[in-house]
Image (cartoon, helix red, strand yellow):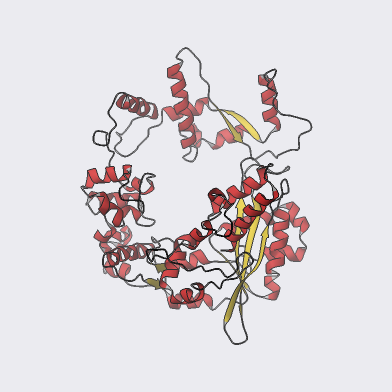
Length: 523
């Protein structure tokens, strides 16, 4: 309801706005301030139209499209909104609080409200020369890690705002800034730590020592240097950062990329695995405006999965193949029920038949839990099927194993930037693994969507091509636009949205886009 949404934007006793809502409300507050300055004699009120998760999308009882002739009345518009999944929320009180909220940014003065900051920036910029050599540069710091103007692999002749700020502050050339990893690239590091390192003029990862990365609660302990440099059962966060430093140092020597594996710890984990091994990957979306009647905003739509299976043969070797896939893109047809049924049919009753199911990160567990809590799906599945899938959830008798967590605990590879994301690990792992090269450097991979495909390739400079980039270089379909070549999760959700909402797409276009989705999910 309107009241519940409003209350969720405030902290206790309406003393401040919750952090997750503040950016949107600062945006509205800025627009409100601009309109007030442009029309000082007007009374300006501010509203947000927001999805209401308490509502469900209903089939229209009649043609409810807005008529433009004559123009709709306020009552007409309010009636349409009331029947939709949206709610119209007056945010005047929230806007006043946002304008009076103290904001901080690199180089800011303490105690300045948002309204004062906007007014000051307007005064500073009106009539000022904004060329690179005269424009004010804000202090560099941890915030630069997310700078959208940073160029790394681009043509060195191109200029960037990041290079300008860092060159002015550090005296380093843009060639130096782009050729060596910076401290802002240190994985999962508190901003305070990075800012402290920058204040010591330790700009590059290769400048750091083990003592720079030691957690605060370990710095005063005897032999703290050993804690970070000596292997333990798991790779700690500070050790992962130290490995990044070593990677940066080795890169300056043009040494061969290396990897680190806590082999004994990994073997203990693997000892509990039971064949066959099932590897599942879900593609989902949670749109603010539902695609289907009877669904609330932000409800999950599970439209695709892939299922790879590894078996142990009689001679003790293992074989892996792309066993099953699911994709449902028909307009107006909620895929969740068919998705859940197809998933059970693919992996079977694991608690009864044996096997181990793997996922990467929490997404598959979250989605499956949401689907199994649905009354519609509970009615669709038999008691045995529902119990078998429920057993795969966290705390279930056969809970899925999170490969991302295993990688985080036991594996590091040069070139991953310290990350345990599958997309960050894939290419570096192929680089250091002769076994993977032997398998994938030949055009011999065959799956449901690939024939005689070569995953391990090098570019003209001898660098290994990211397999996800190969999905964008489809030689087999020149008619598929670059925007419709799916190579990451956001693109998959966008492709599904196009298939659901574009009523003018012909059959061949749909087939090409569906094929792109299937190829991505198989990888």
